[in-house]
Length: 219
Image (tube, rainbow, N blue to C red):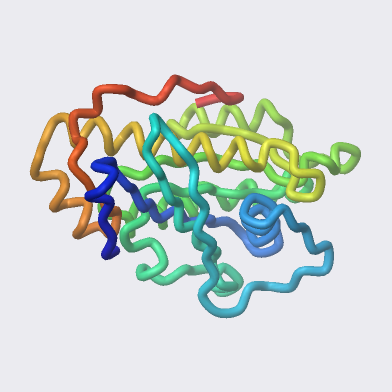
């Protein structure tokens, strides 16, 4: 990332976040709902690399999230290591109406742990909560798994936008907190950020103001 904000003297962050999970759990629609407030009920499997960049303000600093969709690779039971490279956040998605997608979460977490090379803020997302009448995975089961794995947890609906923005923003804020703590503790971390494709530009690294705490269903 080649940018600077010398005139403003502030900081700019760019974080890579990946969305993983079985095919047809709604990953692409979660991204399109968050990034463009769109939902396509007839969306097909993603082909090719797809990502969206969203910005938000935290503590007066511009934070950009580059959010990657799996490009249909999950249909082949594996996602390439390049997809995970440099990721500092992940949404692990299952469909609350299909238990098999919930059972696959542990495999996706193993893959994430295998390929990630830095601290990753992780959230378990039970999507399609608008389909309560055909639910196959309880809220309690989602919470329990998230708690055992040390994940944030939230149920969402890309269809009606329930919790979609909140889920992404919790992950982005957690990444920011992780980075802020490391910047406070080590000036050398700025070099590590560059290596991991998470870029910090600017002068203010004192981290004097921290983002407010936030809550979700479970952690």
